[in-house]
Image (tube, rainbow, N blue to C red; front, top):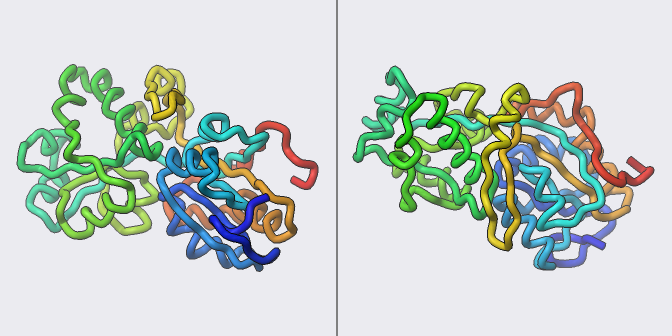
Length: 276
């Protein structure tokens, strides 16, 4: 049974372990959708999934940025998808190099300069990190530039998700690959990438699926249109009501944070409890 994150709590307290990109939405608008006292802890989704699988956390609800993580490293009996997102290139309009991205004919041209400070997240910790690698690999073919991904990638660019945003806010990076929701929430200017590479479009699912990445522990993740999913791990009334608020019709609150919520949401997968 899950209680609060790592400790025991009351029946009206609901603990949510969530993707870092959901943190803002869950700690603001979501709390007004439920009568329960909601405690949110956010990490990169791959890290969060490992924390639950290894017994480091025991939350009531787990909400992640990639449904595949519910199969491995987690072994969840069911989950519900509830939102979509896209990869964008956010830039800092207050720095000289950031201003060049704003006016560039192609989004990657300024990034090839050595003085441009580009940030991304760790692919071993969160889906944003490995989806950024997928986006850049797809860009190689899309733009017919074989060396593009290698030219843009370096280990010095990698930050945990929350630290990346702090670096961006402080002006320490000029641009970063982020989710559209992250740019919208923080009012960062951003460049939309072509649907063929931004991991958002089901029409390109086959080409996305040609991408893969091996996580620590051996789980292999493949490219797919970005989806968020959640599962409920306890049977309390408060947890059930909060889960419903998270994934059902009231999930439209996510749209103001830059997520996409369609009429197809939520979609339930697996051995779903009858209470759902």
